[in-house]
Length: 264
Image (cartoon, rainbow, N blue to C red; front, side, top):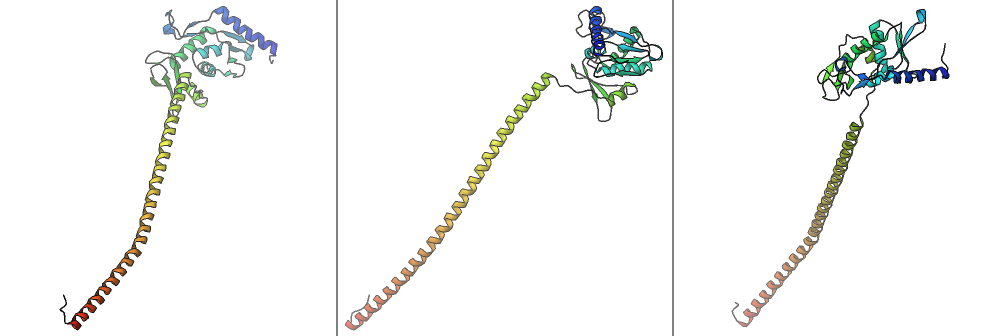
């Protein structure tokens, strides 16, 4: 039987009311259950048996809220229950309904959830429950602590790891990381612009020096062309004046020999 809108609204209202009535807040991890000042909380699990006979199923009513508090996809926790119980499990991304085949009590599922938390949630170094799921190039699942940065390997013999490899989590950036990225990008852009300006200036300077040297070379070549003919003209003039002097000297000698004077 398919549920209509009215039934869906009733189901959502039941989830909200049950979570309010239970006042379902407890510390994440059994080791922190007695710590009254522990700040990382999770809602208590609420289950509901649906169907009869061979079609009986266990609905984890608030699976989305539980998984959200653990910073893990609800599909991972649902699949983990199915793997540990040896039963088929299904999580609907659109409706948020988590179903496990068979009748399972809340205490049993809560114990399995504690095992899931030990394996996939708290840091082995500092105990912080905020860890990112990483998938390496060699298809290994790792957990990186957001607080201390410690990276630990997940036992790949666990059945859930194959599901994680096929359905990797979405990597979400924090607002702080985004701010740092934007600042770094702005600084890089500024450095790039400054480098471009310096490069353009250098190119202009090189062009100017090249133009100056070329003009100087042209000027020197033209000066040499102009000076060379003047020198030849002056040389010609010098040769002519020397010939005139020789003629005058010869005339002077002839005059002296005619008059009987000695030449000096």
